[in-house]
Image 1 (cartoon, rainbow, N blue to C red):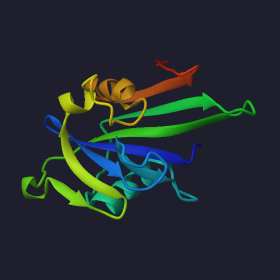
Image 2 (image 1 turned 180 degrees about the horizontal axis):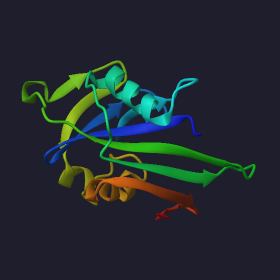
Image 3 (image 1 turned 90 degrees about the horizontal axis):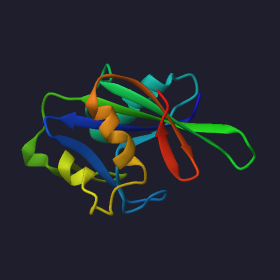
Image 4 (image 1 turned 60 degrees about the horizontal axis):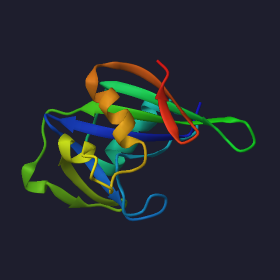
Length: 150
């Protein structure tokens, strides 16, 4: 089991993104998330992180991925990525300051635009897969390339 998760909330053609105020990836748009706590399953950790960082209670994910890579000492490490669908967004709170950074609902086209340099590494590669259809996916990151394994 890996210790980190990153989660995206989708509503129609928008995804909730966080512009982080702290390292790692300070100043970059990404999903919300963090560390799974001791005794939590990855799904429980993801749901808790979403609630803590956004105030949204989510249940079943729409799609989920696991990204794995080999560390410098030849061990396997990884990260869980989630996409949750939510029914409502508060347009009056389109941008919200939190302890982690700035939350904002961004259009999917904006996130995936090749000219957008402000999105976290690999998001433009795995998010389209998570958005495409429900399911569980495995990705492998090797030699600076992210590959869909299943």
